Amino acid sequence: MIAENTYDVVILGGGLAGLTLARQLLMSRPATRIAVVEKREFPVPETTCKVGESTVEIGAHYFGEVLQLKKHLTDHQLPKFGLRFFFKDACQTLAEGTEVGGSEFFSAPSYQVDRGRLENFIAEEVTSQGATILAGARLRDVELPENTGASVDLHTVNFTEGRAERSIRGRWVVDASGRACFLKRKLGLSDDLGHDVNAVWFRVDSNIQIDGWCDDKDWQLLTGKVPRRWLSTNHLMGEGYWVWVIPLATGSTSIGIVADPRIHPLNEYNSPEKALAWLEEFEPECAEHVAPHVDRMQDFLAMKNLAKGSRQVFSADRWALVGEAGVFLDPFYSPGSDFIAIGNTMVVRLIEDDLAGRPIEHQAPALQSIFLSLFQNNLITYRDQYPLFGNPRIMALKFVWDYAVYWGFPALLFFNDKLTDVSFIQSLAKGIEEIRDMNLKMQQFFRDWFEADSTVDADAAFVDQSEIEVMTRLNAELRDQVDDNELRRRFYDNVELIRDLMCEITDRVVHAQPDVKTDVPIGPARRTHLSAVFNVLNM
Image 1: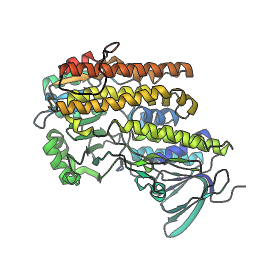
Image 2 (image 1 turned 90 degrees about the horizontal axis):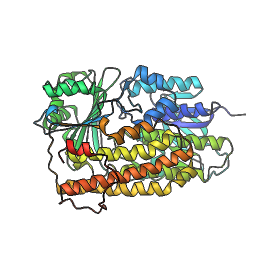
Image 3 (image 1 turned 60 degrees about the vertical axis):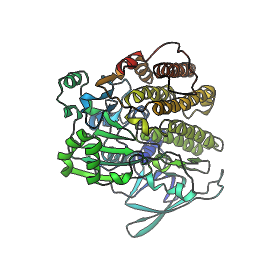
Image 4 (image 1 turned 120 degrees about the vertical axis):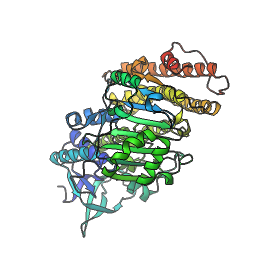
């Protein structure tokens, strides 16, 4: 008999990571007794000041298909028209600069989500599934028994509700407390990633559509080819920074500034007045279209040191860290929901096995190794890259490279439910290591290229990613469900493809700009994939 106030799983935090974990657990094991300890009261405001409104393929697949939330996403959130990037000088309009993005939606869907609206919906769902949400609860302490091993010593979670002090116990405790990082702080697990970026973001109660920012005739003709640009996660790119413009289904628009503090210190834009003045200097076109709506600003938040690491995220002693309570990379490319999806899926696997009486002493460190390796491999994409962000030639090619690594490896395996299959992952070890080695070399190549030629020449051009066959194919293949042999073959085909991209990019760039010095082996690719991109960029 289960004692009162005793649960199989206690989740610390009822934000996106905690609520989706509860739903995933209850979908796979409906009898699981779950308590969610959350400081907010539900329903929360639909437009809530949290980063993470833009999803990409792994996170979108997790929400839509794994958690079966697709009807909510299609009916009550917005479809996302991919990631779109604009490069220009401060004195140029969008029409006079370089645009990189698609003219058609990619095959695998993604979404723009109002976090408050989504979290309210999932909270209702998990409550109806049987979870207990302890709202208005302030966490005080978590008592973790030492060296529990295979015993059934329970964790104790102490919190306050109003003025009352309460305690509950759980076989598992999962920290989803976001940047409070309760367990990580308690256990001293923080890890310096060597990647420092700051951000501010705010929302205005207006639908600011980027499509209407220019009345240039050529721009309007291109708009006919690129309908509803405003549905993209729009990035305004500059040296050391990027600005996001994201639409939300409630009719609000989210605006964010993310920057390398070595180039743009946070104190230059860390208030609403400073942020608008900063936009007027570096992105005046954006400032012009935001300024009329500042009186309808709904929130404002400034945050230092966005990237967070942890030396451990899963334990065989039945605790885990998920979402930002564990690790966070960078909002660029919108990977936050991806790592929620991957981390939650691994934790669900561990909890299921443990509650079924299967040992997890070896599985917990094995899954943690996979998770942290994926995280570190992705970190390579961001570290020391912000100085390059204003250069359209470098970035247009970096985008193709980064997408190919992402779609060709972790996304392919996640869509086929293989990131928790330790033996299958081990069978790909040679290819995974080769991708990591190539990614290290290529990110250094992009930095070397920038050192050799930092000139920004944002010509009026459109790099249409919908016409880059390698991108459309890799994305479309995510939707194919294949057996292990075919999946292994596709993975190694992607390793070859990524190697081809490395050879094509480096060979073409070094021939065009011999002053670019690199340690990347230069050699001809088996076939060319990016001729159209080079032609648009006049290279």
